[in-house]
Length: 111
Length: 118
Image 1 (cartoon, chains in turn orange, red):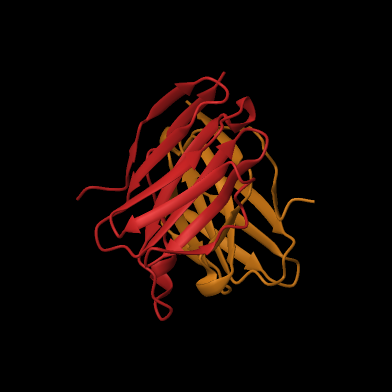
Image 2: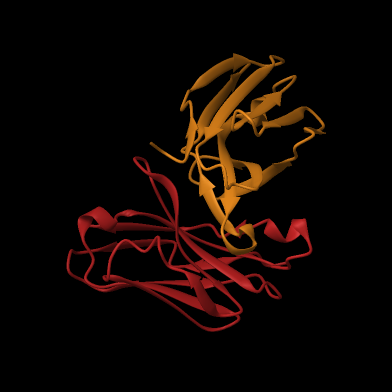
């Protein structure tokens, strides 16, 4: 079983739609959680951290459920530029530097 | 500001040859990470360093892989001998590590080296 599991998609949505991605993690020792974004043939970049209380950054909202070991990302009012692969990430190890990546969920936003 | 720099960007080599990938972290960062990304396995951490010292190399697939960080501004990942299954994109990332600062955990990735072993 993979440590971080995501639906690979692709999720095909029209511009303006709301889309949600889910992710589950298996290691209860995970302490920090993130969503990274990766464009085709580019490097991953941090989209947002995920806090226990949930957090919002513009059109993006992240939620964490520690009891269910579940993380979510909600994107409202999708833009064409949101098309990318979204990577769910947990961290553990000394100083929680050891990132464990899911294989990603691909999002395609169409006009 | 310059980000993480990796070289070469593309490498094509024959099975059995030695491959050396290079990374220059962001100036001032004290942690460096090597990752490998494939379609099947996604992004996997191979090894990371704090203050030039290897902390965790449990992700290094086998003895054919080795990594060094001789100083704060340079690291290498070497594969000897290379095999076709080593074909992947290899990313280097760096971060500023401080136990007291949550923001220190953000890792900045380089553009990657696309390795093809034939």
